[in-house]
Structures are given as C-alpha cells and as structure tokens.
Image (tube, rainbow, N blue to C red):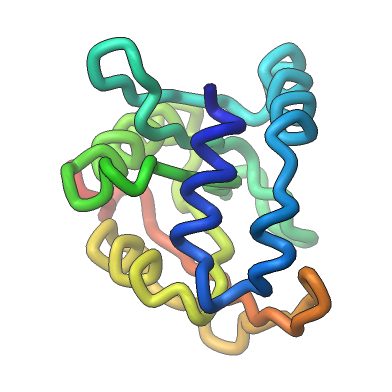
Length: 161
C-alpha cells in the first residue's frame, strides 16, 4: 500500500518539477521491495496514517544520515500523503508523532531535505517549525534534469506539540 501511495503522491507533487518521463516510470514493485526491507530491518522507523482501512500517509525517520551530524540529530527520511489527504492534517499528525518519538529517543534537532522548487512542501515544513539552513543547497541529477535540494532544520523542543 505504501509503495502505491508514494508513486501517486510523487506523480502529483512533482509534476512540473521532475521530468514527466521519470515520474511515469516510477516502479511500485521496486518501492515495495525497498520499503519492505526497511520495515524488516527496523531502519528507518515508519509510521502510517489510516482513514478507515486505507493508508493515506506515512513518515520514515531516524538518525540523521548526513556526514558530520551529531548523535542527537534526527532526520525525516521521507513523508508522503495521498493527494486526497493534503491539507487535512494528516501530515501534521505524522510529523507530531515522529517528533515525539524522536524526542523520546534523545534527539534534540531534526533535519530533512526538500526539492527547492517544491513550494507546497516547503510551506508545510516551515509551518511545522523547520527553517532552511543557509548554504545547504546541493544539486543532483534526476531523470536527466538538474535538481536542487535544500536542507531544513528544526529544534525538536520548538516543534509544534
């Protein structure tokens, strides 16, 4: 269920940001294998949001994977919600639950990476207590296009309760 949600959310969220050929080629089977392995491994931690019997969102988080990050820095590895669940509070509920868990594990701050052109996501993260880290921009190639990511940081104690 999560892989299908990821593929659909990505196709809608990144339309016009990521090459359409890349989005069309997203493989639910490959994502399913990747996330099944992660669940079995227990890293990252994963929470899901359900409405009735359907998964409408999920968040993956754990220790920060960035070089040089301290042991008290967590990271949101990924967060997705079905487009039909956007602006319903699902993302905030997932973030708050992950934030509580990260705080209980002793993390004092949390980071994440977001595509610079994803204005909707950046607004969500800023409302959630994140701020863009100065000079954090990095570029990579995705589907034949140059993409810029920005690192955002939040103090866990200042995140919404």
